[in-house]
Image: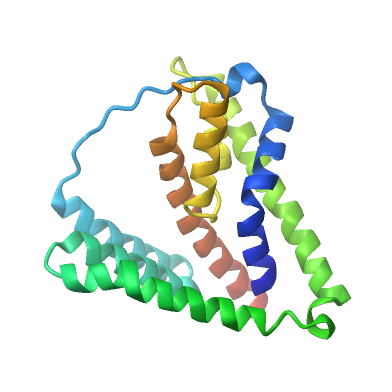
Length: 212
């Protein structure tokens, strides 16, 4: 499962453009969205991770370890009084953890453990789900456009997955490929963050149901 998950992350720049182009037109991909930067109060920035953690705990308690760490990192950055810890977490710590995670996954890539029916089925089902997530997000954005005067670029919907921040970068690249003056990164990042949080909670719910 771990290998499959990280395989999808690596394949985002390949899979998403194909899935998005299959259900959008060139005109839709060129839709521009006006971004108005609005200030966010420090209180809101601090309350956000706390409230998300509490809500996730009520909805899917099993997801709390992952949601808690995500929100703890956010709180370290936004509280403004733990700069040293925040900088360490963003740089040295994340690099060390990435190396250890890569080493841990690599030792599982032995042929007898990886090339079996169960693992290949997990990869196949996961790949199908990943593609349908992207397509579903695009189609939902197109549905919303039927009722909106200011149209949403449908590609934003595809960013609502857990592959953060890779997916939002892919969406921005696709937008600039179609129109060099089209900047949708901030909207894509917002959808990407929502998808990351939502996928963790949804995964926690599934683990709770099937684990029981």
